[in-house]
Length: 379
Image 1: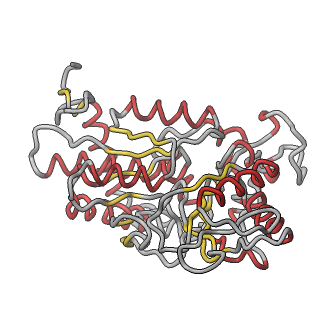
Image 2 (image 1 turned 180 degrees about the horizontal axis):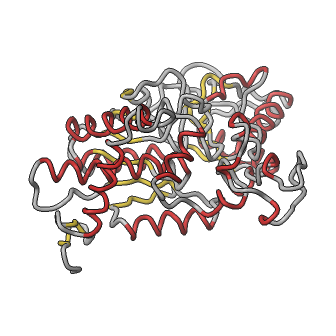
C-alpha cells in the first residue's frame, strides 16, 4: 500500500494521521474554523454553522454510519469537502491512528453527463472515498447502505439548500419520509445561497465539475439541462446551441435567482401542484390512485380499461410512456393495498405531459403525492 495509508476491509485506503491528504484536510478544517463572521462577513457564519452540523453528525452517528450523497453537483461538492475536513478533525481530536474513511453514495442514470461521471470517479480516487454506486431506484440504494450496517442508525449528508424545490420544511437534522427506511437527513448548508456556494468553492480552491466553467449553473440530466442563457457572452436570453466558449462560468451569474434558468421546467402548475418535490435530475415518484376496491390494482391505461393486476397496469403505463419518451417501471415501495408506485424518470414537462394525456384518455391516473428524491437530497 501507499506510504502513510493502510488497506481497509473493502480494499480501499484509510489514511494515517501523517498522510499528506490528512494534513491537507486538517489545514482546510483550521482555515474554515478561522473564517469567523468578522473575518468573512458574507460566508463566515454559514461555514461555522455547517461545520457544527457535520461535527455533531459525526459525534452522533460515527464516521461509518454517516454517508454523503454525492452526485457531482456544486452543492454536493461543498458538503463533500465539509465532511472531508471534519473527518480529519474527528480523527485528530480522538487521537486515532488513521482518519476514518469517507463513505458516499452516487445514484447514476443513463442520461448522466459524461463530465459528471468522470468527476465523481476523480473525486473517489483522489480522496480514497468508499463510494457506493447504484443504477436503480434510490430507495434500493438507501436500503442497501442501511442493511450492510447491520441495524446501526444511519444518516445521509445532503446538499439541500432552503431555496431548492425539494427543501420543504427541512431543518439541519430531519428524519426520512415515512415511506423510506428510517435514517436521518443531515443538511449542513440549508441556509446557504448560490453566492455562498461559489465563494466557498473558489475561496478555498476546491475542485468542481468542469461543466460549471462552461456556462452551466444547475446540472440535471443531459436531456433537460443546457447552458444558462443569462451567461451568454452576447447577452442573448436564449441558448441557440452556441459552443461553450460563448458562455461565462457559473460563478459569474449576476442574479442568483436565475440559477435554474438553464434547466427544463421544474416548478409545478395547476393540477400537478403536488410535484413540488423535484430533484436535481428531474426525477419524481408518483403514488397512483387505485382503480377500484383495495387490492384491485391500478388502472393506468391510455384507453381507460380497468386492469386487475399490477403487472398489467405496469405494462399499460410502459406502453403509454414509451410514446412520450419516458422510462417508467414498477417499484416495490411497501405501499398500502390497492396502491402501486411508479418511479418516473424524466423532466417535469414530460411527467406533466404523461399525467395530462393519461387523464384525457380516460385513465384513472392521478397524483396523490410526490415523493421527493433529489440528487443533492434524494430522500
